[in-house]
Length: 378
Image 1 (spheres, rainbow, N blue to C red):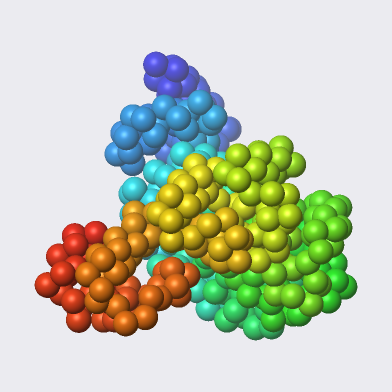
Image 2: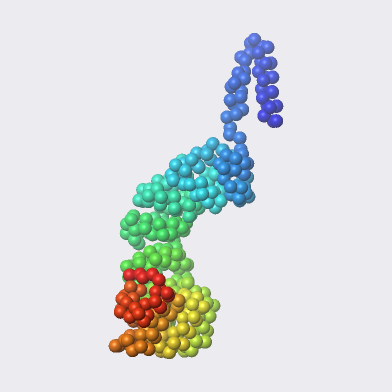
């Protein structure tokens, strides 16, 4: 309605000017052009539902953060660019729900440089789609400041763009952090403890977020591991630091209480930790179920578990139970010339165990093992 009144006013003004021969007439077409040149803001919900055909759920969530699309044509350009880059409507809805600010971003200065950055590193178009969809907040990060510094930090440790690309494919959210101020000091601290660069790099690939803790916390954990008597030259030293870093002191105390309730002494617990630190990261229920199974079979006692703590890490249903059952049947029928150790048997791959203890005795245990372990892995 307001637009109609404006148009009427413009027409009236144009007619008035024609009555004065000394004045240049105002062109109605030029007036309409001037009045329509700025883009008219559109309510976000209307824009997303009517213009982009997005779901009402997405529109509702986004409109709680952003009320209007101020420049609809520019927003169209952004979404069209993303579609042309390989993003589906599902991807776009996911991005906009998590990062509504994308609707008002600058395509040339903010969006496109991010894509060029990843492409220059060696990421494929599908990689970029996966990265941005899983971590849309990186679209709001400065390429020059945060991205550049983080890439240099990773490259200083890993050595090449290809390796940097590899680790970012696993966890692109690392780029949200200032790695030069978080990751690098922790790596330098660990190196000063005598941990090799190769071990640090391997751990970085597998558990990159472990290097984002505060340096003061890492230093405290190094001290705790030292007090437990793990040699700094041992490969278990870094693994122990990681295990301690994954637990609060309360959780650590709960693990101690659990082991003691199962019959382990403090020396036993310390010995288990030195041999298999990552065991302590497992849930209390998992540790309890595994320990009770092992100790109830009569095939091993606490001292055996202490010397072979890797047994506590195996799956009860997929490894321990079926293999123990197979051995029990073979031993009962005197089919084994030499009794194997449980630790040795459980270390075997499914394929090797099948070939050695199931296939030769298929009439006795074949069906039993197949029922429990239907798939064989090399």
